[in-house]
Length: 298
Image (cartoon, rainbow, N blue to C red; front, top):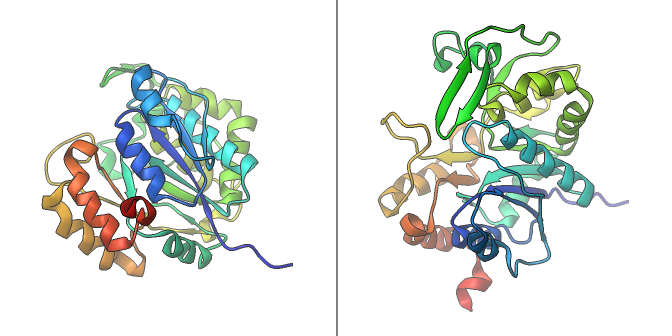
């Protein structure tokens, strides 16, 4: 029996800018897309985002997500579950609604084909000095609530879970199918971990990385992942909680980081983009990497 080529399913987590989300869906053609739109998004914006989408796009049940909230993990896992149940994809990519590809479908497939059983995710063990004085352990040691964009912390320490390898990493990742399955299985089968992470801070930067790095939950992951992010993110030297929006002034950096990759592996995606700030840059990217060709010609 012939082996099917490597192909990703794409989980897209969005809450605004329907024009860009639709453009992202077009640029990801022909891959299956599993789209979540935050339930707090106004109905008019939601309808503009989802009405008339192609059949390869499936909508995930809507819940309230937001900055630093546990529900971001819930939607990510829902995306894995839907992609695993609804497709034969070899990998599952997690994107936000402000991301965009820097490669066409053929190149994405080729990159994944060379790593059919591997995930692409940059992780690091905790504590890590880049995450503050305690290396990020306070995110888990104390109970937290997010209120708007403020952190509320109960200053009573709790016992950290045992038997897991506490690990940090980005929400943006491409997981091999069996690693995505392991995440869903841990979410379903380890209510003790869910209870702990539900009140952790920025859980989407620690829950999935910890599940992946724990041999009892994801056997073999240490030898089955590429310690490289497929995203280029335009961080600058300013102190900010999220990356800056990209525009035409960033075209050189975006295209250079795409064509002169770190470590020999390409950056297949970048962020963050918006219709208001990034349309001209996105047009350049489309032309450079032959994206949305049918749309451009129409």
